[in-house]
Image 1: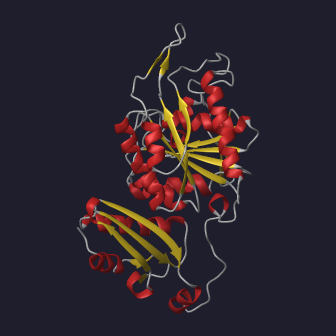
Image 2 (image 1 turned 180 degrees about the vertical axis):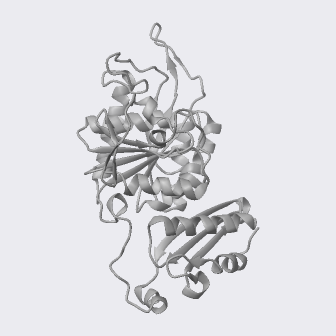
Image 3 (image 1 turned 60 degrees about the horizontal axis):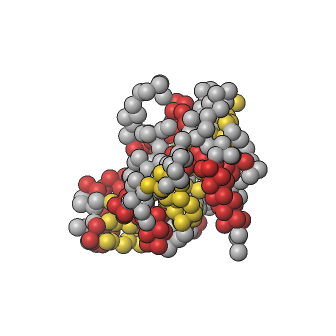
Amino acid sequence: MLTKEQVQELVGEIKDPIINVPLSETDGIVNISIKEEIDHVSVKLAMAQLGGQPQLDLQMKVVQTLKDNGAKTVGIRFEELPPEVVEKYTGKKKEEPQTIEGLLSKDNPVEFIAIASGKGGVGKSTVAVNLAVSLAREGKKVGLVDADIYGFSVPDMMGIEGKPAVEGKEIVPVERHGVKVISMAFFVEENAPVIWRGPMLGKMLTSFFTEVKWGELDYLLLDLPPGTGDVALDVHTMLPSSKEIIVSTPHPTAAFVAARAGAMAKHTEHSILGVIENMSYFESKETGNKEYVFGKGGGEKLADELQTELLGQLPLEQPSWDPNDFAPSIYQPDDRLGKIYQSMAQSIIEKTSDKE
């Protein structure tokens, strides 16, 4: 396992991409912490200017360098260097911050909510699209980013057939059920695999935030990839602040795996809004008997472990489909699950409206 001294030396040789000076010279390594039991390295870095591709490039370089030298996982946080340090190396005073505008501006009031899971197959995307639609039904202005770059499914789930329009240099998201949607699915050929490497994916994610004409939003939901890989970390790092909802099934093992996604949120200084337990049970329409097909208690256990609350439990049930407005994964307001989603949306609004 790497030591702090080794991390200091390895990262110190990497140059700040804005001013082309090694981080060791700028005192750009603010903090290093190591968890030896899981071979995890966390570093906090200061660079000349936050945002955009330079920050993503630096992040990828640091992550790759540390992984090449023995770290299994790497967490990175960023802050800006003091103006006087930047001036020292550029010979001029720092201009007005050229941070990423729009959604990623620190002054933007939009509430980011990331929907995450520890593993695939737990219904995370279904939860994301239905929470987005339910928030829109409550009269909120809602956007949804399908950030599951390799496993994008949101457009199919919502019955979206159209493609985004282009206005000038901006992409206009597709609106469906009152939700503005952007997804990798719009930019690849049907059923084509995504085989991009990290930097290209980072650029696409940045475009989702900065080159899309979102307009005014109250909430932007993000359907994250399952687990704690580089794409999920990229999203966490980009956002100025975010709340996270963890999705799990009731099986104790699934809940244990999901706890890793919650740990990532805490590593990146984001807060956990709550846990949603999906596939909690099957209830027979004929007898009313409940069968706990995937076990019982995992959601509550996960919420306790993450020191948050269980927002809701969703039974196994197909949505009722409107053949004239086909959206195969959207529950109608009168569906039993539609009512549960609406209740959770109201709870989310209440929680995020409390700024005190």
